Length: 167
Image (cartoon, rainbow, N blue to C red):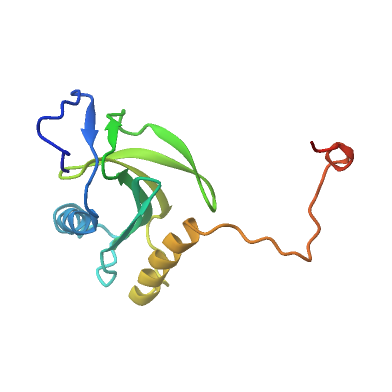
């Protein structure tokens, strides 16, 4: 994490966002977690890589994290952002272009707090490493894509809305 300026004062209950894409930092942390905490667990998929893709979205870092044990969506504070510290495990509902998602406040040693939404844990045994990587990339693209509506499908409108005059 980096502060915009060490002179900028923030409270003990706040933290600065990341000025630069935190992908590399997240990969390093998940590699450490994999080696120290997860590698001996029965659902650990050693052939599955650790892959992180992050993209700046509305001032925050939004991305996917694929590990040998899970696929998650994560959000970290972006450049010039100050986030309040929250209770670990607190749930926060957010709206993304593709729909609403509920995130949980988590914490990693070097990045501090982040929001995480588990999509698959553990990773399904039939998914290959290449499929896992593609799934992580496709998931991020899908999260930020606007839903497409088929023009041939009629829009469901209530009777009241149908006859209500718009100004």
